[in-house]
Length: 401
Image (cartoon, rainbow, N blue to C red):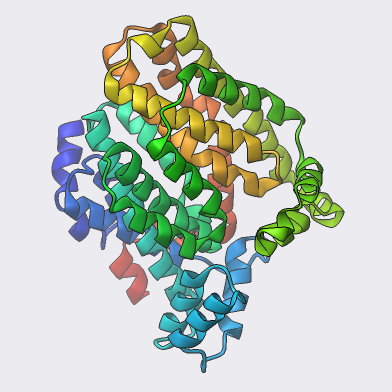
């Protein structure tokens, strides 16, 4: 059956016009193929186009209003001048506004283009993961790919900035830290143009390129912050930024910190059922991370890992430490943890491939249970944001009807 699906995936770009969803699933069975990569990116673009803009709660609705209110007279030069003068911090979104409004005022087309670009870079990340894992098939491999799609799903296309910045940042991180290619710096810088908040993560990447510190110290840092983060909240971070007087060095970061830690913002997020459910997911994810870190320490695997995995483990610990430092900082803190979870899943797969440790086998076997609320969040937001009729008809038939 799996061989049949892989053969069908070879014509996925053609089958896309019959059923985008089934074509996407088939393409994921053979991501080594560039044709399937095209299908992968097309599906993300199609998902962006399918936004209904009816429910006012999702980010996509706000972006639609922002796009429709964007002045037609604004040029690329105007956007760049605003960026240089410090009036805006995320330039790529505005440049996309200028480009799309030169063609149409339809926000569906904007999210189609955003989805395609973000989907393509996520596909490039997956090609790297295939290279690092030396695999492109099997239940365990498809499980981690599925989880990564859930963790950075097409349901977040509407946010535009983070959806674009994350895969570009991760691709640059892989190139710079794992492949040791200096061209990765280019993609890291591009990620900053998409979302300025990645500047913290970029500094960490640059630091890790030259830091060869004690892995045991990184382990203690990661596991301590993982536990301590349970007791941190947005108010704690507001006080921390105030005490550090960050505003003297970067007013943009300081103002964002004050906004997210304000009593009004905290109250608004706490009223959301989604926020409470995702907090439960954070506790479950912490358990997943703790089991992994404790299993490595218990079996003294830092002394028996392959050299590639030692470097990957070091990078993973650093990103988990950064992520758990920020994860209590409102919902936006999750973005700093996501690279660490991606890296952990890669390392878990690699270690399980040559080490006979039951804990790792069970973590992969039951990993979907550990991320059940993430899966539910994606399904719910897809239901709320997307006009699902697009996924129930063959595309040409729907366009005719």
